Length: 437
Image (cartoon, rainbow, N blue to C red; front, side, top):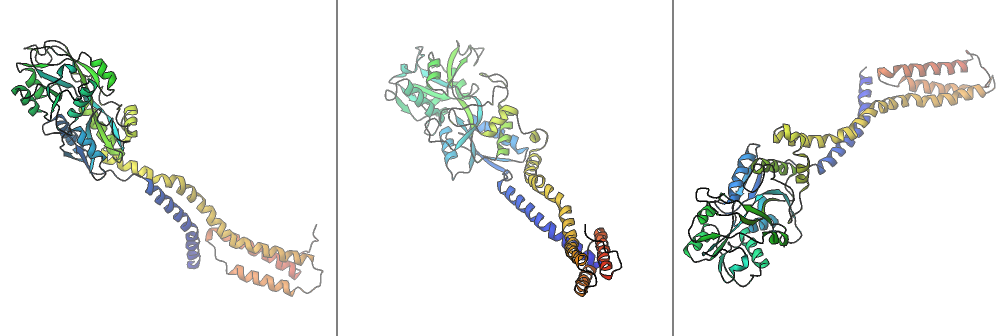
């Protein structure tokens, strides 16, 4: 019994080991192409201290922390520096806030956008009592356009260039509160400021005597000339109803704030960031309706494939119902289990057949010998010496008696022994000797 059991184990091993090796190779090939687990830390480049980018970065940090993702915020001088960080292969910055239009003159991008988040109005404040509504009326003025590396400066230079004021103004590298102070103190004649409606600097300047807000009478022209700009209308009294500020509707131009990422950003993290963006920016605002943002589209960088799918059909199915870590784990397991269904299951289905074939082959091979011997016996004349045939038959019988097969195939051996006995009966003359037909 032990010999039979050992034989069975050996035969199974001979059949199963090649199949297991094939499955292991399939798993290895799949593992080489499966996405690694998403990192637990993502670095986000924001903007200046106290700015809108930093404020929104803190909200992303809080939301992603609920899913076990740590967001490290890196302050910067603005959108231009953010793009530079993203393009730097040695930088660990993976996501950044980028003002629309910053990437328009860049080399072929290695970046991708996750979507537009909100409008960033351009406010042009100036000193004086005269009503100005065209940028070229600032000719010869001292204009604060923001520091190097800021999105405000990049946009201001584009507006001035489109208005024919490349060299006819004095540019001051001032932005934010410093630009407001210079305008109030009279060391600047105008200031370009990119900020939200609720920004303290906007409310401060709109309430300052002697400081006026320019309405872009040619906002449509700028919108056509610079595709990343949008015409907005600031309703009368929207900044201060009591003081009726502004005193009339004001036309503004605005790029959008965009979320831009490296192409290497893990797809699962991209979906998680997009879900956070929908929660943070999905509400109504002074210049947009509820649900308008985040939205697809950007003139600077191509949309990521994850963002396209997100805006078309929402987050992945599993992320809608499961915690982030569980959804990503199941996603990876599904990919890893593909070889099981594509390779392992078909192979393991043929294992029993292969095993039965190997066992029966050891039995059936003697039927060939037996058939040749029987043909010789039937074809020889009666009375001839049959010692050679008897010797060969005895050898076959001895070999078969040593044959070990699993109990489930024992009947095959017994049947073979019955056939051997029939041939021996022919040789001994104990059975009829019919002529071949």
